[in-house]
Structure formats: structure tokens, C-alpha cells
Length: 171
Image (cartoon, rainbow, N blue to C red; front, side):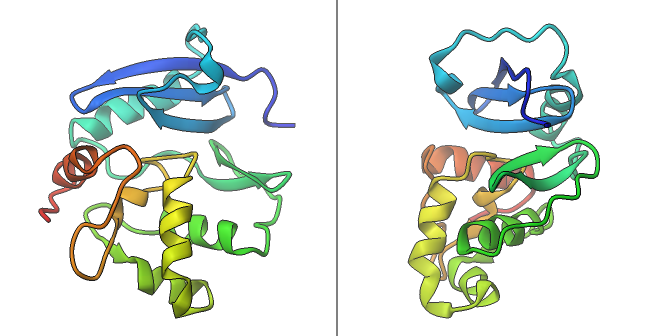
């Protein structure tokens, strides 16, 4: 099982603190300004494979993270190495998979993701899924915008604009 021996760490960035949980094989959460499970960071280097890349990304020096979106027991994880569990057949998983494929420096509107996921009427549901994304930045919900502008972001629009600015997108 990949989600064993989970550790936590905190990465300070120019946009605020990012809390990460995972291990040497996968990342299970990336969140802004709140420590996962309320625990104190405890990793001793096991998460460096990801924190080093995230630091490079925040400086504009990394466009693609090592790994890919995977699912373990229907739970999204960012897997460092190939992991063969199939992607669940539900809207949540479909939207996360579509978001994970949005290239660096590009955006996609909620309605386009909904249409690709199976129904253009799911645009609000896409927004809700973005707001509950447990893998912010690496599953880039900040690249999802409204047809009429920037849309929302659970961590605040300043962070969304900051991430898009790193990628050269001005909205």
C-alpha cells in the first residue's frame, strides 16, 4: 500500500505556507495555510523529492512535476512512480484527471471540463471539485477559470493569481 508511513512538512513560499503529507512514494495532500490533520511537520527528508520540485515551481523554474495522478482505494494521490490502480469511473476522479492534464501556462474553463467529463451542465460541480482538490498546485485547479474571468479558488484569488502569474498567465 502506498499510503503508509505518511509524513508531513511545511514549505514557506512567497504566496504563503504550503503543507504537504505523503512519503517517499506519493503525496496525499497539498494544502494552503493549514497543517493536514492538525499535526506538526515531521518529515526528515522523505518528502524532499517533492518539496524541492515545488520550490522550483514556485520560482518559475519547473513546469512539470515528477509523477502522476493515481488513485488508491478511490482516493487521489500523486504517485512518484507508475501505479496501476485504475482511475475510478466517477465525476470526481474524471475532473481531477482532466485538471491534471492542463499544461503549465494554460487555462481551461469550468464548462469545458464539465463537457469533457460527460455533461456541460456539470460546470458548478467542477467548481465544487476544484474547491475540494486535495492536491492543489500539482493537480492544477488554479488553471481552471470561469468563462467570464478568473473564477474562484479555495485559498483565495490572490494565491490563484500568484500561481497563474508564475506560469505567465495574467487574468
